[in-house]
Amino acid sequence: MRRTDDAPIEEGAFAMVAQDSGMVAVRNILTRLCKRSGLSSNRLRNTEIDVLPLLDLLAVRQYAWRAGIAREEAVLPLVQELVLRLEPTDRLIVDAELSLGLLRERPPNGVDLDRLYASDLGERREYLTQRWDVLHEAMGAQRIPAAPTVRSLRAAPEHRAFTELASLLATASVFDGAHVVDAVIAASEITVRQSISAKSRGAVTVIGDAVIDHMYLVDRIPGPGGTARGSYEEHPGGKGLTRAVAAARLGMDVRLISAVGDDDAGSRILEYLRSERVDTELVKVVPYAPTPVTSVIIAGTGAASTIGCKDERIRLSAQDLRSSGIRNALAGSDAILLTFEQPTGVIEQIMAELRCLETRPLVVVHPAPPLDRPQYLYQYLGAVDYLVGADKELGALAMLPDGATGSGAQTATLLRALGVRSVCAIQDFRCTVWSDQVSAEFQPFPTALEDSVGAHAAFSAALVYRLVSTRRPAERNDYVWATAAMVATQSVGDVPGAMPLVSEVERIFRLATEEH
Image (cartoon, rainbow, N blue to C red; front, top):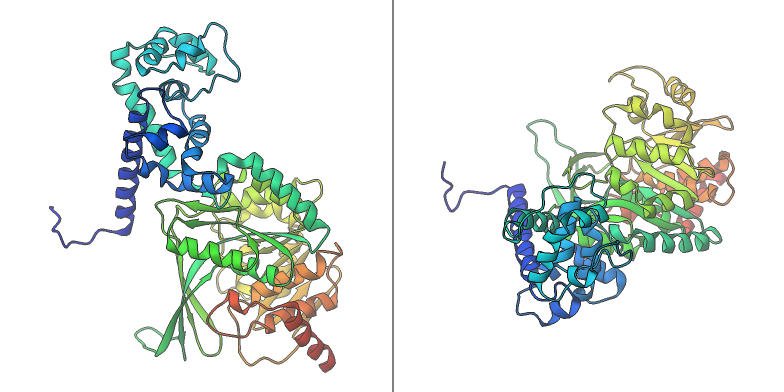
């Protein structure tokens, strides 16, 4: 059916069109840059080719920002790194025709690098076809295709190689402030920060989502077919972001591991995190994908209902977790705050990494949203020091059926049998704890609201604040202090904005202890 001019196009279709057109534009630029001496920063500055689509790529902009160099200077090292991901034949073609010089550091025997990287494209092509087998062996190829002629090389092989490279450039997800291929530099800087943090307020790594919250503030949440009057606000949010802000406001050194889109909403989230002194270096930025949105309906009592609008492209991957930057962040932290907002496989890989650490950080887990296959995590629950969630969330992790009438104590026993050291059930500003040291219910001060969206985040961050310097199990007053932090979040609207300072928690804590 033919589309009329005013027929709507879905947002995903726009993204695919933009992605495909971006790849084609970059491929055309790269193939034109092959002429003469190949790719260089001087060539990009002085060429008659319109190279702006290449310089405007997210990966190029972030690489340049990271290294403190001009975008023209960032293209060559970035391309040299990305080319290493290509198959040997594609890598060889791109290396020779763009004159990247990948073989200069370790010149292979029998290869004349002056001819392979000659100033004339025609000579580079001719030498490439002549020394085809030797060059493939130098690239570590397991299977060597038949050598092409110069004419046939210019057809399908070149088109395929440059299409693959352009696709990598146009779609590469990057970490904010640190391109994924720059992991060595990122790891070294993280290590330096960790050594500083360990001597000061404690280094905390948070793993969870960062989204834009669409907040609908109503007198009451309407039922099916009902209506309600209210107001609307937009704020950065997400379980991961809120916990990161909560920990930073308590004075700890915090970094967030998350993912956002390469759009205005993603930029807004990154700016907000930096304004709250949260390190965003390990927040992945995904091109051609919108930052997720969560709709939150909050009643006047503080009770809330949420609708999460996810995009499968905006998430961490197994490849991300293999980067030295993230692995060093996990190993060098004093505490890890983890939510279940990432795919089950990613959560499983994080838990496995934590379990294998020789010196393990304090691990606090919020088991929400519920996982499809929680049993896959059971073998790793021995790495969890504190499991913090509502009764329903804890029951889902213990695989209790919906509507099960088992008590919180029974759920806690099941989870502790799987290795969790302490279970904290939170409901309506109350906290009930089951652990070897403490088994009690805490409600330190009367509250005006019934609930608060940010209460769980405040509790977890406050508990970490009390324990990160002592490395001892939580005692009664630690739980009282963390519960006081929940009470301090009583507000509707901006969820991370309600996260308290130490002085605010201390004030409520003193009131609570005076009452008791």
